[in-house]
Length: 234
Image (cartoon, rainbow, N blue to C red; front, side, top):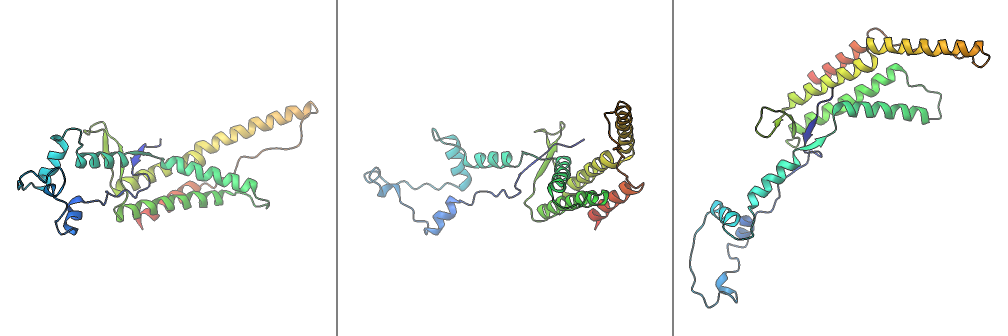
């Protein structure tokens, strides 16, 4: 079963770079003073020193119609880091389906063999694995899963957490597509189709075409899962 993932979808979220206090410092701390404006030229100057935290609090809670910039930035970051993300199972399924389409649309006589299917799936697995590693190593990837025990209903993942989920979903996908149960179902379907063909032939309406389930080597699943596990450990 695919696990629902949430995170910064593009993996590139960055906090806004605008810093009003830094801008003021670059102006040599000489912004336009109120006493120099038309409204303040006839009013006596009053010197007040307020810290950055104090100014934010004043702006966010005391001034009518204003907003708390810091709180707003935190809310924006939270939302950006909790976007629904495509599951690993969906990505594996999509790349597998695309491979069928590409081979069916090609003009060559080349067939999508069982080994080529393995190469396609393992290639996508490695691509996702590299994506996870580079994202966490570079500090740009953020992922969560649902967790009813946490305050906001989400639990933040570590790199190892996400790699573990990837390997688990890859294993389930491979077992579902190429494992023993799948092979047994394929054999049943092939038998039903071939029995129907025999009946149609007896009625003079069939053809001599028979169907064989795809041959899957007995160690196919084991080798594919080992290759995936070894890649994560490397």
